[in-house]
Amino acid sequence: MAETSGPFECDACGETVSLNEARRTKTMGGLDPAKWQTLCCPSCGARLQTIYVGE
Ligand SMILES: [Zn+2]
Image 1 (cartoon, protein in one colour):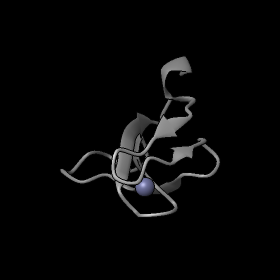
Image 2 (tube, rainbow, N blue to C red):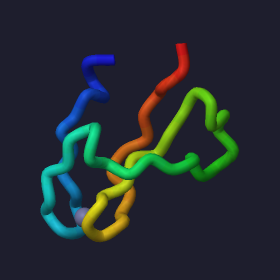
Image 3 (tube, rainbow, N blue to C red):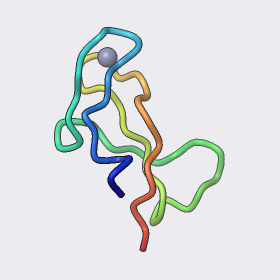
Image 4 (tube, rainbow, N blue to C red):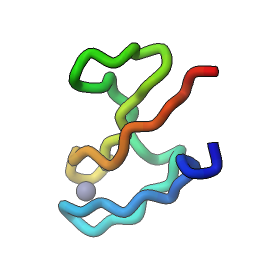
């Protein structure tokens, strides 16, 4: 849990995005959306990191 608390740095635009600011989308590749979410940059939409949100 500590490893996914952010902030995350966007490789595409250089923005530093906190966990609350990041856009959350479903993961690509068929992972369970109830357990995994992909964080995207709110500025440019690039993927930041895939995080585990299940229990
Ligand atoms: Zn970005």
